[in-house]
Amino acid sequence: MGPQTELHHCALKFLVAAFAVLAGCSAPDHVKVEAEAPFSAVLVKGAGATLPAPLYKQWFATYQNEHLENIVSYDSVGSGEGIRRFIGRSVKKEERVDFGASDAAMRDDEVAQVPNGALLVPTIASAVVLAYNLPDFDGDLRLSRKAYAGIFLGEIRDWNDRQISSANPGRRLPKLTIATVVRQDGSGTTFAFTKHLDAISEKWRSQYSPAILMNWPGNAMRANGNEGVAGRIQQSVGSIGYVSYEFARKLGLKVALLENREGRFVKPDEQSCTAALASAQLPENLRFFVPDPPGQGTYPIVTSSWVLLYRKYEDATKANAVRELFRWCLREGQKSAAQLGYIQLPENVTERAVAAVDTILPR
Image 1 (tube, rainbow, N blue to C red):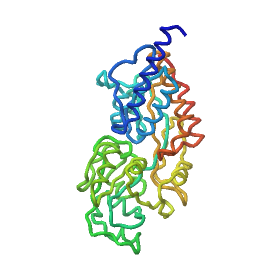
Image 2 (cartoon, rainbow, N blue to C red):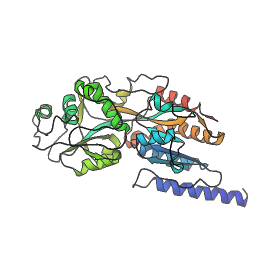
Image 3 (tube, rainbow, N blue to C red):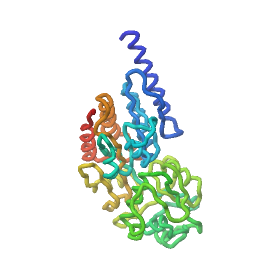
Image 4 (spheres, one colour):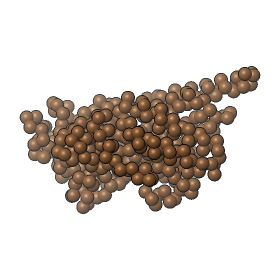
């Protein structure tokens, strides 16, 4: 190795290591890159869902350490904003991305707006949980389908309401007003939760529909991102909110056991959430949902998270970089998912996802 080549390699290694340190910081779950990558490194920029952000942060840092020729940046701005940046119309130069991310798969009309075509590739799955703050309540809170639908419809307003107490016999519930915590930004987590409510509650279905942005009934407290919702629940006695499981776990929040389709109260864990994915029907476009999965031990609210990739990229270098990054995420990255509270995709879904990634081409 000549002096110039060695200098190039060392400088690039230093840059990637520095970026990995930044990406691993505990402050935000995103790092914004303002400049183009120097030397011959390929910069791959993404933005979108907050639900998979902790896992993506770990994946991308690990990938960079093993592939010094790539730098990966991810801005966790929410699914709605991720879709907007991916579509790319009226987007500022600094907001342009090579991939988006969303827990609400893009609609057909959104896909039609992408000039180079779009691939929706599932990367991971997660449970949406109802985290709560009731410091004087002992044991696990059980919530029937009627109870948690009623809470978020604004009909059940007190913690000692009969719909809640009847599922928790022998446990004292406080005479305390319920404060719901919801997302105020466009959110795939909101979509997953409202799609579930749409499946289980006729009253909800008659008034609302699944959406990434909701005008929630009642006096709901609003926050940005899963991290914001989890933080608001932690600070607010009497609160309950929907949030991705890994964020609730990170803050040590209590999460409710939810009544599933078979009438069982189930906690979210690897086994109960993996069981939910077993019923998924996989269409050609990989846009699958399990809004109310069957099974005795199945947790009822599980969602996939997708990366949004272009079918064609500006050149072969960028196409190869994106293709190899997400092949690695789907193969090697899956192995570390459970450590952070995520659900590894079933093998049949992974194989179809890898096959989709392999179709990426340069323009």
